[in-house]
Image (cartoon, rainbow, N blue to C red):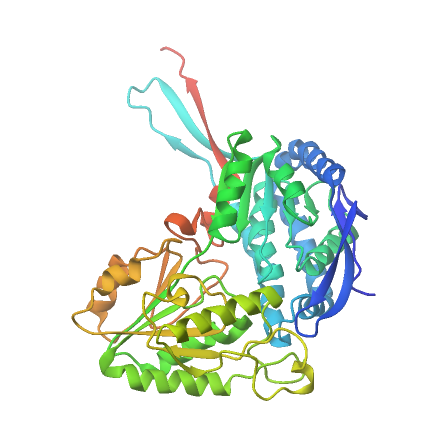
Length: 483
């Protein structure tokens, strides 16, 4: 099959010591059997990255830029196939696959340009006896663990700054969605990228992944995943002092005030919540709506849930694909059932789509769901649901909204505010303990920093700030000759 691919280790496409079957969650069909790494494979990748560090980190910026742009062109030339890989491995609607591929192209272009803007600086000596230079150098070997929800977007956020900064990187895609990442490995091999600069291997289970984390070779571990996984990786990586750059979980609040543009709010909340089946780290989870506009907003949310196309047909206008597997579907169904049992009102969805077209007869589809009367006692309020569920929580002027919005054990990644009152918007932007506050809109781009606060992560993806995770600063001090 065209999706039966190989790992990319030490500049070669190789089989591994194990295999994993990749199943399309839209159809439950096996689409590929791909290799997974054993301990020997992991050790080979670690050694190749270590051996590549000296040469790659000392390679000129111009040469690194050349390799990055060469890989970018290979991505462009193979865009259709890369999109097919994502379409089949995670059942993502065809239109949604474009964002993944565009992110990879944009990251390679952006960081190839941005690394040239990193300049050494000097510090004036107060006594006038020495000169001091601050020099940026490659941090070392990077190890990246990726989530499955955006297979190439997540890879893009890591490969761009690592290559630009001169850090050899070992990329471990999720075993649920390794195909598109392996396809990038094929492109690295085709363009003749120096061995060890980029390596891509998946693992089946924690043992080999923990072996990679525990190795003394990586200087940086970077992750896109849950807070629980982040804690586990930090524990296993503590064999040596390492840097960490992690984008972790969140339980994003949305504050919709009485003066909000309700159509805009409903479009954004439902658009982000129902696209990619809600499997987005910044997806709105707790939608706090002022009681005076509760009925109007709720009606709009239900209308948008009904209008959202659900399925996997490449030629159809589809917003919502399947969730990643049966376990995820059962978890979402349990969240809905728990909420209803505790008094929530199910206004839309909550189960498989009612009208099962032929291509929905199998797979793990959850209809776009709207729950009203959600309270703090419900699991769907307390947990990041990572599914197409809009949970509406009413508030009024007597509600301690600040405490409720900031009450998130998983930390703060993203929050949303909808109001026409600019002073109120700025007030809430300062009060919300989240790494990103989106006011009357939403925007993400490779040049905009993306990161959380507290349990939601360390460091940043995207923007020039991401380079800080892959670069270290060395001070060079020279004594001046005495007059």
